[in-house]
Image 1 (cartoon, rainbow, N blue to C red):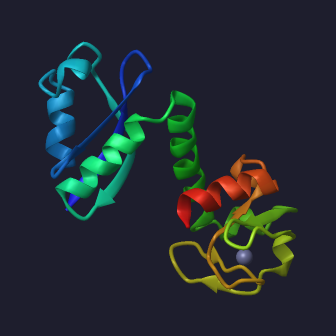
Image 2 (image 1 turned 180 degrees about the vertical axis):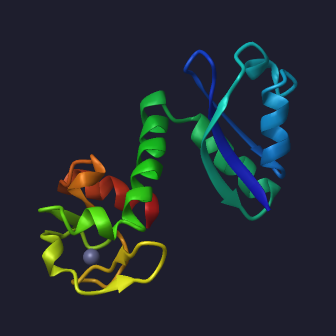
Length: 156
Ligand SMILES: [Zn+2]
């Protein structure tokens, strides 16, 4: 198993890399042994982690991410962060007036949800498409078609 990762450096810039051992690699970055770029800019914070089957797939993905603009990279971090709000969210979601599904793109009231996955605190299942990809307004993200499309593009 390989990992593609994005770290945020001390100066706020983003560095993308890949490694078979993320713990070890972060330690290297944070002791100034990682690479030339982070040597001048550590400590770094892990902001994004993605699994890849093997080294060559990881390198392809690393290359693709490195071609993105900072704005596009921030969008990857953002959609990753937003995804956390689509699981174990029953407590906050039931109080929301609006939620959206980033699989089928429908926007509706959480009162429509009648199926929950029994994980830590409950994950909503979309009443329209049956996929557990619902995010509520209390996540702080805009429940708009545009945002749902961004999430869909990233996760499906
Ligand atoms: Zn749906």
